[in-house]
Length: 122
Image 1 (cartoon, rainbow, N blue to C red):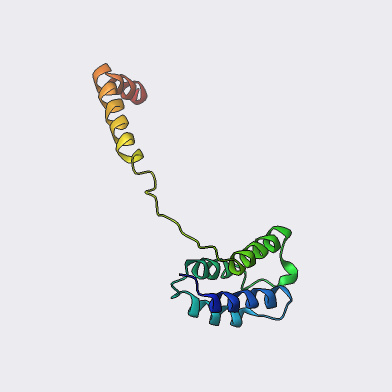
Image 2 (image 1 turned 60 degrees about the horizontal axis):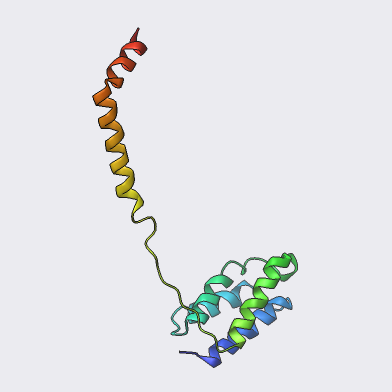
């Protein structure tokens, strides 16, 4: 669901920020309102703006400036933002446990641990 009125308000805030007319208090007030928005683009842009609220527009790097311009393009368009949470390394934990058990079994069967620790104790 696209909330055109709130998108325009947020775009205006970003433009004021880039012109040096908005401060951290404006960002904080706007973020509290936008975190509960049904428009995912507004929510995403509000999260991203939290990183810029402490910087002044004069201290932005070219990459930051370009990124804020892209956020403005997103807000001015009728595009939506969606993401999915993917399981992070879901399969690696059991594989690592299995490999650890295999290595320990091989070490015990070859007698590596007995010879190795006897050599260290001498």
